[in-house]
Length: 255
Image 1 (cartoon, helix red, strand yellow):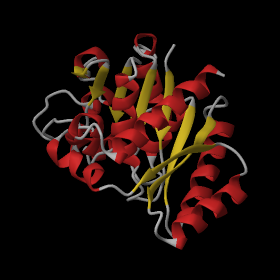
Image 2 (cartoon, one colour):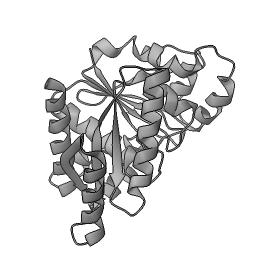
Image 3 (cartoon, one colour):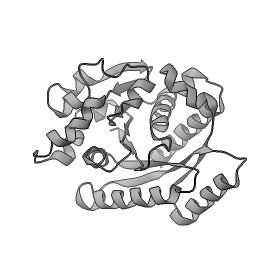
Image 4 (cartoon, one colour):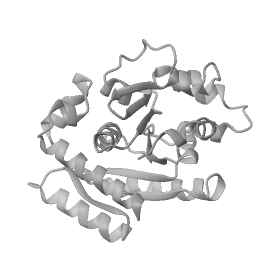
């Protein structure tokens, strides 16, 4: 049965979608069967993996509206071992349309149960806000991976997401755990990056990945070419970092 990992942080611009795309691609490269679920109406994970938003008939929105099956929505073999459940701006309307549904918080979980046996990992890219979509993702997930940008307000975002995880665990998904924190956009030249890492380590005292994702030009360029970093520039520092993160994620699951 696949491990379902939600990549979440209520702060935007922390490398959440970058992590979802590149962790998925590097897990697939390591021989794991992976499904990336783009659960953000911005659809950046979809476009970052090479698909044009707005040109797909069957996305996660149609799935939630029960207009198609999950098998019909999944785009197979984006790269070897990597499938995608795409999204676009229509998903923003799902929140309002689902308000009267009795199990509105667990609709994604219901759908993923149908395919979780097919994958080793299901990676969900969450929206950068606390809304019904994020609650759905956390209700479906086994664990939550939190990317944190090495900047001044990092701890604020972290405490918010931990509170949310605790709340969802209490009310909707008792098995939900914190997968870990991964530092992104790390700049070794600045004292601030070092301070943020130390502060978070002191605050959290657990579940921090050793891999730190650096600021990297190639990593920033890759989405505009519709490619994960391991395909766009396989020898870049960004590609090596996400390979290391993928190896850590795999080994954490084997314990």
